[in-house]
Length: 464
Length: 98
Image (tube, rainbow over all chains, first blue to last red):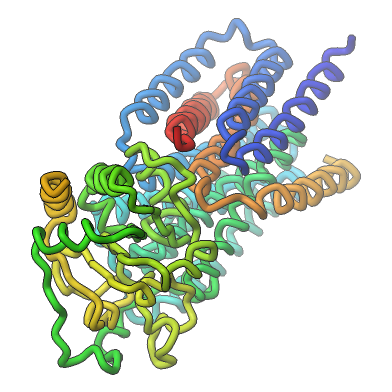
C-alpha cells in the first residue's frame, strides 16, 4: 500500500478515536475508558508520524521524547490533588510553547531550503505564534497566581485596557509583516510582543475568576495546536486542535454563566477591587454573628437527620477534605442523610471540589450539582458551609445593588439551620459582606477548617 | 499550499469545531476538571507537528531549527504524557458508593 495513504488512514482512525474519547469523558461511568481511547489515539498518531518520517533511527528525537515523558510522568504522579489547577495551567502553557516552537522551526526549515513562504503559511505561522505565546505566558501567570507565587488579587493600573489594545494592534502589525516579509527579527519581535500580551491579559484577573481563565487558556492551547496544523497541512492536528478549542469555549461559557458575568467583564478584570468600599449589605451591618463552639456544634449535628455540606475554596486551602469526609461517614453511620452541594465555580478551576472530594473517597453520587440540590435546602436540618462565601450569599438573590446580584447561588439560607466553618469574618472574593453569616439561624464555627472539623468528628464520635 | 488545500483544511476545522461543541455541551460538573486536563492532553497533538518539523530540521544545516524542533518535542511530550497520566489519576478516584 502507498505509504501516504497508510498514514492518512491511521490519522483518520486516530481522529475518530479522539472524538469517541471526548464523548466518553462526558459520562462518569465511561470517563476513564474514554481517556484511554484518547491516549491510544495519540499513540497511533505519533507512531504513524514516526513511520512516515522514517525517523525510527534518529536518536535525537527519541532522546527528546524520553526527556519529555520522564518530566511529564514525574509531574503527573507527584502533584497533590489540591494543586491540580496549577498543574493544568502549567500543562496548558507547555502546549502553547510547543506550538510557538513548531511555527518557528517550520520558518527556519523554509528559509534554510530557500522555499518561499506563501501568504497562507505565513498567516498560519503568525497565528500559531500569537496564540501559542499568549497561552504560554498567560498560563505561567495563572500558575503563579494559583500557587501564590504572585498575588492572586487583580492587578490594576491606569490606562490598562488602552495599553493592552495598543499592544495587540502592534502585534497584529508585526503579524502582517511576518506574512509580507518574514525575517528572524520580525518573528522574534512578534513572539516577544505576544508573550508580553499574555502576561498583561491575565495579570488583572483575580483569583476566583481563575476557573474562567483556565478554561479559556485550555481552549487557546487547542487553537494553537490547530494553527500548527494549518502550517503543516495536517488533518489530525486541525481536528484535535479544533475539538479542544471548542470544548474549552464551552467550559468557559459554563463558568461565566455560573458567575452571572460576561466573558468580556471577566477578561477586563479588576473585579472585587472597588466593590468592598462602595457596597454594604442592608441588614448585615451592626448585627453581630453568633458564634458556636465545637461541642455545641457536635450536639447540633447529633440531632440532625439531614445535612448538606457546601464546600468552597477555603476547604481546599485548609486541606480539610479528609476531615469533611470523616464527618460525612460518621453522620451517615448515625442514619443522617448527608450530601454535598457543589457550586459550578466553587474553587479555582471547574470541578475543583469534585476532584478533591473524590480524592478523599467521597462517592460521586453524593456530590450534587446546584440546580438539583437547591429545591432540597428548605427541608434540610443543617447546612454546613466549609470555606465557601460568595456562592452562598443571599444578596445575589435579593439585593439589586450588590455586585454579585443575579449570580446563581446555593440557597443555604433557606435551610432550618446553617453552620459556617470559617477562619474569620473576612469578606469573600467579591469583597462584600455576607448576610448569611448574621441570619438568626446561622452559627459561626471559627477556626482552621481542618482542625475544627477533626475535633468536631471526635466530639461526635463520643456521643454515639 | 494552494487555496483549495486551505479550504479543505477549513472545512475540517469548522466541522470539528461543531462536533466539539456537540460532544462537550452536556458534561456533568463532576467531570469538569478531568475533562479539562484530558482535552489539554489532546492539545498535545502538537507533538505530531513537532516530530514532522524537527525531522526536517535535523536533515538541514543550521543549529537553531534543530534546537527549537527538539525543544518542541520535549514540551509537547510533557503535555501529552503528563496530561493523560494526571487525568487517569483523577478518574481512578471517581467511585460510586459501594
